Length: 181
Ligand code: IMP
Ligand code: MG
Image (cartoon, rainbow, N blue to C red; front, side, top):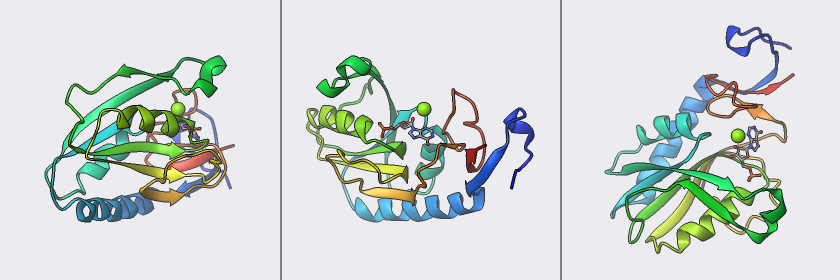
C-alpha cells in the first residue's frame, strides 16, 4: 500500500507503522508512567536533539508534576573513534544535573551506541537518578549497557521517519511514523 501525502515531496510511504492517534494514546500513557515514577524531587527532562523535539513537546504536556526542560545536542568524533566511547556535547544544558532526577528523552534506540556514550557522560554529573524514555526501541542493540526505563513502542527493524525522525533531515514533521518506500 502506498500513501500519497503532500508532505513527502513525491516520496511514497511503504507503511504507516504508528499513526497519530496511536502515538497520542501511548504518549499519554507514558506521561502517566513518568508522573507515577517520580513522586518527589527535582525532575529535569533532557531532550536529545533533534529527533526528540516533537515527542518531548507532547510528552511533557502529559506529565503532571513540576519539571524543567532542557536539551542536549551530541556529536560523535567520527567513525574512527567510535569504539573509544567519546561523545562531544555540542550543546550542554546550563542547569546542573547534580541531585536531580534526569529523564533523557530519545527518539529511537537502534544500535544503542548513542545511549551508551551519553549515559556514561551524564552519570559523571552525579544526578540523583538517570532514566531513559525512548519513543521507539528496535531491540537490536546487543551492546546496550543500560536498561531503557520507558519505551513507547517496540519498533520494527525498518528505517522509520516522522514525528521527529528524519531521513537526511527530511520528514521530521510527519504527524505519524512510517517506513519509506
Ligand atoms: P543508535 O546510536 O544506533 O542507537 O542510534 C540512535 C540514533 O540513530 C537515533 O537517535 C536516530 O537519530 C538515528 N536512527 C536510528 N534508527 C533510525 C530510524 O529508523 N529512523 C531515523 N533515525 C534513526
Ligand atoms: Mg537522525
